[in-house]
Amino acid sequence: SAVISQKPSRDICQRGTSLTIQCQVDSQVTMMFWYRQQPGQSLTLIATANQGSEATYESGFVIDKFPISRPNLTFSTLTVSNMSPEDSSIYLCSVKGLAGRTDTQYFGPGTRLTVL
Amino acid sequence: GENVEQHPSTLSVQEGDSAVIKCTYSDSASNYFPWYKQELGKGPQLIIDIRSNVGEKKDQRIAVTLNKTAKHFSLHITETQPEDSAVYFCAASTGGGADGLTFGKGTHLIIQP
Image 1 (cartoon, rainbow over the protein chains, first blue to last red):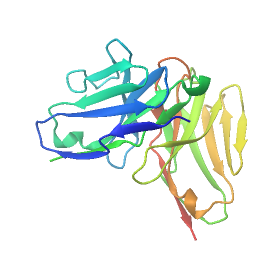
Image 2 (image 1 turned 120 degrees about the vertical axis):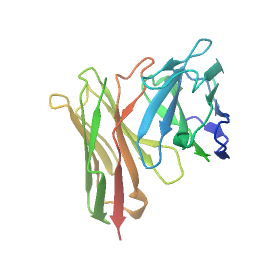
Image 3 (image 1 turned 180 degrees about the vertical axis):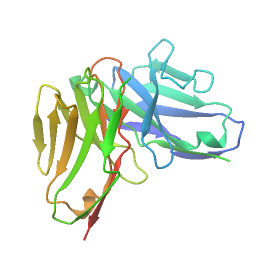
Image 4 (image 1 turned 45 degrees about the vertical axis):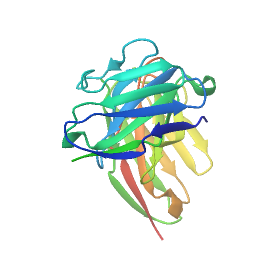
């Protein structure tokens, strides 16, 4: 499977600031997604990152809070804006469409965010 | 939308015994069911998946079964080893296109030596 990297791996941020998380894949993929995993919880889909167009957000997530970019087939960013302690979570990038498998999703290592 | 229920939330088994984790889903349109293993501090790792045109799939000590009529699927791990200790998540989706995954709440599997 492909190598999926995320930067930063972890960060501690102050309330009211913003953090941009990067996701890089070492081969082209058709789909990229962003998930959130709150402490001790399951994964929740935030949005689908669409190349060259606006991301598709799930219910409960909005573009102003979680702006997403996907400039090409191997890279995406997620910004967590105007952070509050409730945003403390692991943010995970996942990709789909590797090696011709249209349904299999692979996950990156995650970005562990703590908001003070 | 899809809803995935997963049980149990914690499972403790003796090393060498078998472990079974069960999930149910609500959306009859779902046709792809992966299982992920997540170790502390790491991202989820795909361990096995099954599609709705298959009833069972096996990969060494790991197997998954699917009952489409009852809308449930299960993960079976045989001959458990200490390195099997982790959190396991089931998920469901319609498989193709732009659909993401809906996850169960996870099962913390503890292998007792």
